[in-house]
Image 1: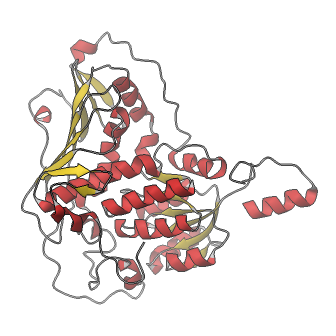
Image 2: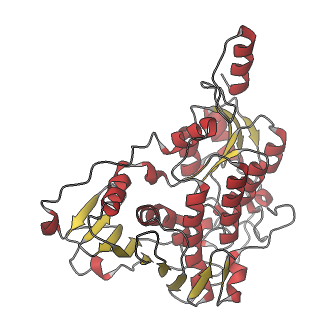
Image 3: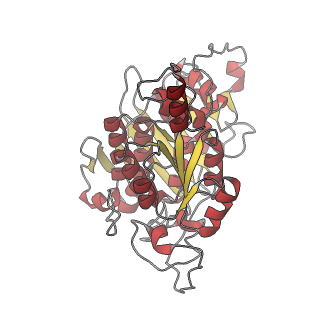
Length: 423
């Protein structure tokens, strides 16, 4: 039963029912649309909100749309989210599971129409778009959540509690490293025909026009600046999230990046980015460093981390270190912490990343990765690519959304939109 049916039946029966400030009946279901219906994230996000009424699916790929409709045949199919949002007046909320360049156009339009929004990470394709989405969500008082699903896990909560309890002392240095890379160079020169099941012009959306190529769809779009932001944009919000949460970070003072010579079209095979953050409340200034590709901090190669393998987030404090990944964390040096008494649990377990958002849509309760928090996180992540592409250390003015010493950064902070796709 959807929300409208519930209200009709309850009213007809003369039954009193409780409603929240947002007007949702206690047991009613949201009318939800999913933009980007299939693929790993699309399928996972659809499953995450499947407790609600899946009113519509939108996908520019007919095959993806068919897969979604095979599982949820009552949903109305669309190829253009703009038409869907205009037609489906009873929609309460949307889920955005598209490539990065579609996040802001879909999210902004939906919020202007009063819809709650769940969006995949990063929040947007550009710093300007991330700020626009966060500002609009606050103005319209809408329930929002970024798809940093690991934020809902217990491991991150326990690590945050340790840092905020002072287990390793004041933290002035954090290192985050993630192997792998989405990397590309020159644009493909051949022009194979576009598959008949793909609406290419809609896939391009606001991005600069170029011919279809399998190097862009369905997966490799992350390699190209026109659509994504390489490995940093792909994984940064997941891994840097822990440092933002634990250390109450917001906007950096400076950002600089080292990597191979920047290519105008494609992302690099490796990158090292350094952000500096000011003091916050009683917390000292912090330097945060990101590494991907074959780059790692010295701590990961000189034996200080013991038998730790793979990716990591390392907090370096005055009294020791805390090392974490998605599922584990440890205090180092281990010998120094063998008798350490952990602080009591102070951060409640999550009811689920999608469930938090669904609940917030209905009763106005907070989400842990709302666009205010995740907007600042996404801005910082995306600024790493801006610094890399400009080739200089940027002094950042967060309020003005400008690099004080780098007007050449402006063209990377926002994009020009194709006609019909402006925010």
